[in-house]
Figure 1: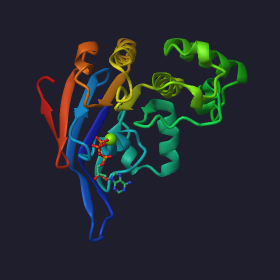
Figure 2: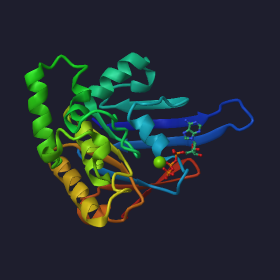
Figure 3: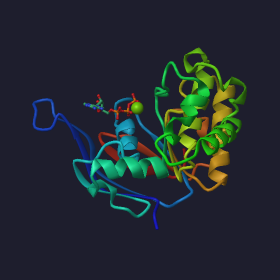
Length: 229
Ligand SMILES: Nc1ncnc2c1ncn2[C@@H]1O[C@H](COP(=O)(O)OP(=O)(O)OP(=O)(O)O)[C@@H](O)[C@H]1O
Ligand SMILES: [Mg+2]
């Protein structure tokens, strides 16, 4: 079974208006499980939009999306939210942390809507904080963290549900090269643990620190595959 399958996916913004924008045009993509996939492409080419479709945050206007074999593009919104929470970890371009809450509270946020007991949530938060090396800052309000620390919390929050698929939008964009290497090594570890990883990035360092299986470029709403970075 493929992990991700897109069939003739189109995404249009401002549909039927004079400024109609076709961001994804006839995208076909099939990814087996446990691979590292990189998506490159110029600013505005539609990488974030593609990740939003893959992450079940938005639906295509036409075409089909099968995630882990399920026809998710045909599902109602409420089903998608549950599916996303269970199977997909999303790391956003701008972190999307919740200001005013501590690192521990941000890490626990995705678990609060589940049936997990308080003690199990605490244990999962402790384990995840260790994995992303932020244990020493657990009680700090997130707005007091450095960019690299915020990125590690954002990754921890995406991992805390133990999802199969990890989707990251420019995960190294705000980091210096040493921190970027650390984050990429963390993705390499997740890949060894069996996760499927999809990253949109401009950063050539991805191939130095990650065993990248597939590289695609987005251009003019279409996706083309390369043999190497
Ligand atoms: N919600 C939206 N409504 C209208 N237009 C949008 C929306 N989201 C994205 N767009 C437009 O779609 C195009 C693709 O945007 P997208 O964010 O997917 O590009 P990107 O490749 O991720 O760019 P970057 O490298 O700068 O992050 C852009 O022209 C953008 O303005
Ligand atoms: Mg983007």
